[in-house]
Length: 130
Image 1 (tube, rainbow, N blue to C red):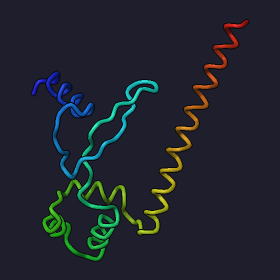
Image 2: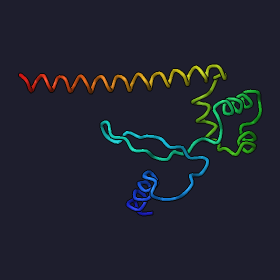
Image 3: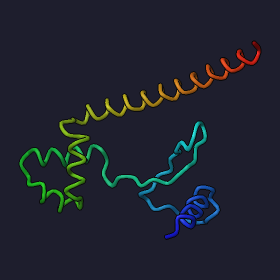
Image 4: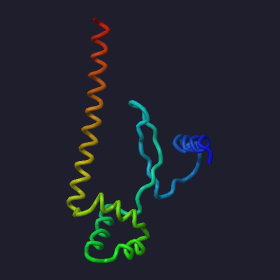
């Protein structure tokens, strides 16, 4: 499709001007465009929860062939490889702790960005007065 048409379609979905229901595997996220401007976009969510992914990887560690697991769960070998890179060796409790740490890190990054912006604005104000 033409890029302009896709952009227009995406903008109308974001603004809500089209009356359509979202598929169950989409999620609304805010994406930073430039500076502090954000735009809400639609993102596809995973069919599997992280605990399910860990359980599938444990089956592979237990000796079940990866090809059989991929066929059984409807995933590709590349997906299995990516999951191993991200979740390999994790337990459910480790996964919970990882999620908490990631959310705390995101919160701290937002706080830092706000403080840095405020600091920059104050420095600019001081420079103008001098």
